[in-house]
Image (tube, rainbow, N blue to C red; front, side, top):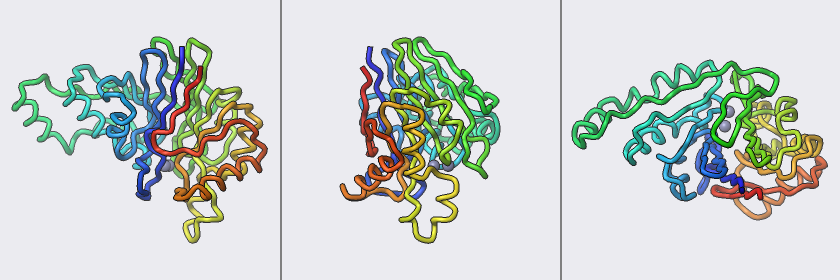
Length: 278
Ligand SMILES: [Zn+2]
Ligand SMILES: [Zn+2]
């Protein structure tokens, strides 16, 4: 039974050609779960071959707009495509709980008129499952053949921010960092994982934004050291800052994580990059 990891967006708040907002699709057997929904997630899911009304659950890492701005689009699109059940949304309790309570407010009139016009059932509100984020890996959701755990990460001043680990009944495992500095939480969560999808930054190239971006994102060399220490098999780089635009830029990200000591497989992520775990 294979587990598939697809990057639905490798971008950051700053629009870059070809890079949608943050998101990772994890599929195992007949289950599909999405982690984060930045800009154009619904479109990338279609390009990845998954109708968004087939998603089983959505997990959110933190309330920065580049990770959640695609949530209303996803909710409305799946309803337009025929979903009648609420989408399960799992998120750490905090500002995201408030966000979830209002995520459809701006579209109330659109939803009303679409429903009246088509006669379809009213759009179900998302089934919001808030959990208390903790510093130790904790199971937050169980599906049919997958189990999802979470741990707090270090993305202050944004709190809470979490990473997720998906473990399957076939023994495969995928960890998604969300946004964080290189931190002990991810190190614990990722131990022995088949795939670690991690955000990354090369601060030296950031110019005057270096200060605030560098201070709450994961520096590439230190990330290589974390991946080596956690003994992950594959490191998939996403949320790349600055966004690579040439093969040389991509090679520089890989060079940095190698310098940190990681010797496993490295994927410098592009939108729709896919890793299949057998
Ligand atoms: Zn972000
Ligand atoms: Zn963030």
